[in-house]
Image 1: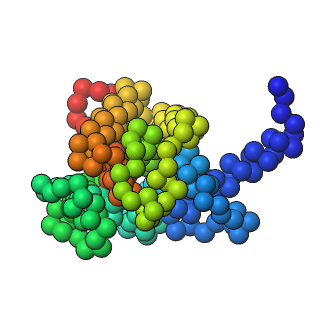
Image 2: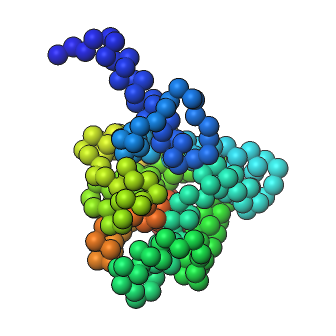
Length: 271
């Protein structure tokens, strides 16, 4: 069946609208006023989270490579990291800290969910946050010192796949928190095969861009690392919470980014 030109245009506009909704949800970048908002659009916009992640990674890479022309690799990495945090409002980092605070100790499911709602940060969360930020800074510095093109591709890929991992987790688990009081209530709904398919397509697109700089074997290692994070988080969250929360999605994104970067920079017998 052939779609009418009008239907194609309407569909394209809707996808653009969903992209802007995802952009507004994950970053502080402004979006056009005509986008509007409906509650179900946020759930549908999960399909474009990897695309937004790729954009965040690309902007971070631009700052990293530009700063490396003036400062040392580590200073450039810190500047790029600060720019990325400003761009996203430390959205995922907050989720990582809250998740580790809640799940790092031997507490009940109910108590863990209460800890995630607490705005204060504990020792577990602070340690995890410092390690994650330091890890990204060192890995970015290592990459840009080796080759700016490799660094740019790695930042784009890790950021896109980090968001893809969060979408995959939403598709595999039920929401574990209080949906009525969730920070993003529509995202507490199930992710459909449509959203998962779109997210997978954007992940492949990110891999295609990264393949311009990285060999297939190294990208394969990064894909395995990302998949292992998703499997680990699925089992851990199933055992501890019976599902995911918004904070654990942020933790999944952060851990996946680190895993991909570590796989790309590992000194092993992979080209």
